[in-house]
Length: 175
Image (cartoon, rainbow, N blue to C red; front, side, top):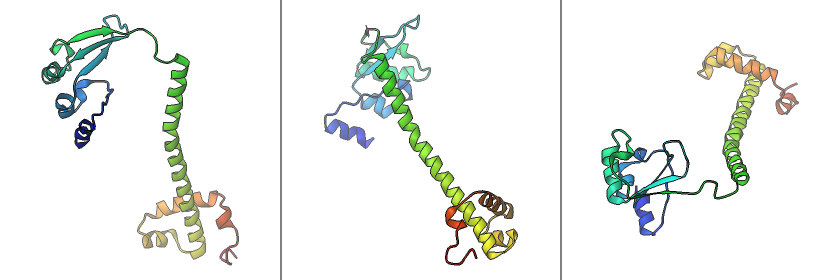
């Protein structure tokens, strides 16, 4: 919560957008915020409605309304309607949102590719090690404190993959 004190010290304004006010930490919701804009739909699910609660009413709303997630626990200071439509053209909004979602998923895909590469390297090394030492799966597993069937799986996968580095004759090892 030191960040919130620093924000106030620097006279910064921060808007927090979240699905439910009652899910906020009490300290931030009650003591470190100036007001609450509750954006909601009408009875017939019409978009574009907002209710504002000042500091005292927001505090009362949090304390009384949190038990049942009830925004009617206290009266708002005022409500308003805002125009239908988007602040930016719909096509631009959807394109930017799509780009943001794709950018977010790319690191996960890169991490998965990296993990796959590491596992393939491990499997290649297991196959090379077994062939080079000519030891049994059980002996290698016991020496490295792993299960024999685990090492056997690594070996089998390593033998089924092509690895130009391990397959070529390096320093007479593969002779």
